[in-house]
Length: 418
Image 1 (spheres, rainbow, N blue to C red):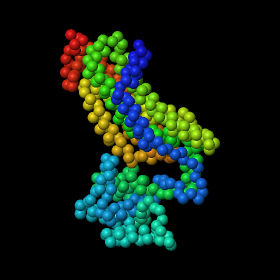
Image 2: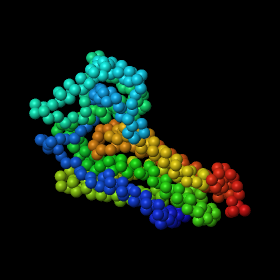
Image 3: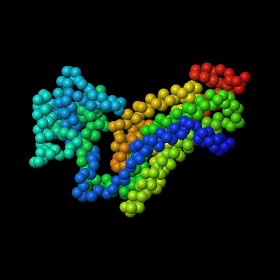
Image 4: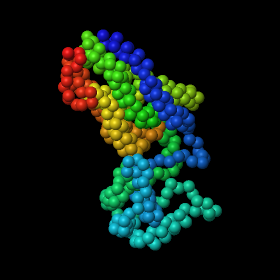
């Protein structure tokens, strides 16, 4: 019975226009973000540059963050990203005065004239004899003598609060200020880690998952909502209620069918970057994990798909409306923009859409793996719990109860019971 219903639901999903729109969105997402993927080659000595990396050195973090603070104070404009979008903040006189006090304590500079002189001197010191500016990622300024890193963090958090959050001085953002050019040795170490630890494809599977998880956190809900509401519009719901199969079998087969039909295009798309990894591996003579994209699809992406589908099915069965789209949309919005400070990976937290926007940083992935595994397990269990509640609601409706039609718990008799 379950197998027959599963096959039938898969066929119904394939016939859905919404399903093919979802597939199109995933294809466009991949082609726009990873369509021009270039596999990292082994760095050679004498290259013009080896890219950049975030330094974990506390002294470097302090210097680069203070450099940003001095420049923004001089411009009287502060960049913030409170919900992911850029916002320029101009402070009041009282707030500016407090920022000046923070600058004095952290750098020893008092007043705008001293700050502007310090900025001018720093950039002058970056010039070569020919007068050409050396490529830098921003100003860096040494902290005042005796300033501890603990006190520095306290003051930067205060500055972030003054600016309304999401500034260059808050947790998760300060480290991004320390974006320094890599040396040949550092670039070679990153490459060797990618080859030895990740077997090349593992790093690109994470990068693939990072981009795909963004849309997989929202598009499944459209498929779930339209699938359920379509039966109501075609007046097939009462007929479906009379099926001999249990509510668990009916709801479970529908959920699994949509899950399978969403996983298949993801796996199909992943063949493209996998083929690129295999091609490079054969040319360079390096090992490639041919199952990496499959493992990351099921381990990284499937829990997010499950959660979005479960929200769609549960709320649609509960309310007989498309409110699940709004609920999931709000959740997706908050999750997407709250993860912007964690793009480099290693800080996965409990976000619905964990990010790792680089093929590198294996150490961050390794150090944060326990948290990531707990995150993925939580959302898988969360989806199954919502699915169980959906089965209960569906079962009650088959008995003529909870016939809501947009009004929760109206508890009217259905045509079936009459």
